[in-house]
Image (tube, rainbow, N blue to C red):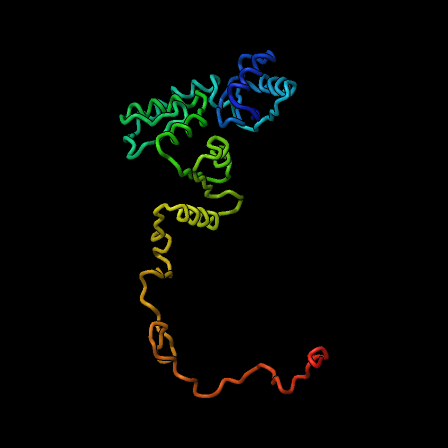
Length: 252
């Protein structure tokens, strides 16, 4: 597989004009500025050379096989057999397919068929995001390490109003990255519920816990009475101004 810095149509035209092997196909329509091609190793290497010669930036991707191409389409049949032996329920909310750029059908058999079909079919990610946006989606969360998809969403939607958040944009982000993502979603106006983060821990919900009392006479900030005076004066560490010599410029 190889990534090309161009849209799918431009990439297909460049492959055809350069006489690239027919076994190299568009596998991922990621954004207006990125397309991934797939095929046999030698054929992809030749396609990369031809695309670079045509003025496009193309780079090999280290992957295990030619995903989303006819070379792996046979795996879809085997996957369908495995899915047939497992219960599949209808989605509880709309789930978009990256093959059709449309929501999955409600029936279990239709869900199985779509999952099996996507293995050897191209990914229409750009079209999927456009379809979701047209349906009203404005917040996109990348669940997993990295921020590649978050960046692609930005390339697809451009200046149109939207929020794209990555849960772990940097390696090793871990809990800090996850909490930062939750904070960004909360600021964006989403109803983020943090109760589960505190469950089973020695933590207190500041909005629900009673106001702690001060050890000094149980005086709290809500009372109008001042706190009791200390039993002995607190020594001051500030220098005596009368004994501190003035700098020369003060005498002018």
